[in-house]
Image (tube, rainbow, N blue to C red; front, side, top):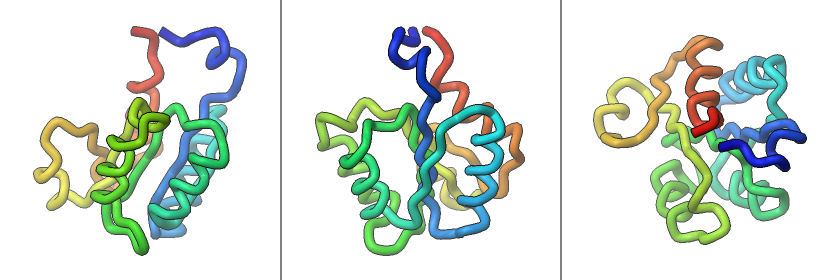
Length: 126
């Protein structure tokens, strides 16, 4: 269930992808839907953003990233008590999606409606 604090502030999404076009499009689509969006081009910058700011409501994470890839990010998230609760939607190429059973996967390329549905699925009241 959405708590009162979440209900009174824009829901935060961090988009992590090394492709600037993917980041820009996701930021535009999510921003137009009322989300507060931050972006990062690699896993290290994503963690810096999460540690400096409040944890996001949803993390959109690509797997092929420089410095710290998406696989490493997933491991780090599970080990960090302050971030382990953050829902993750993995943005993956079709051939990668089959290696992610049990994960919420948004297959690239995706449409704005698919992106919004993937994020919203983690924010709906229980």
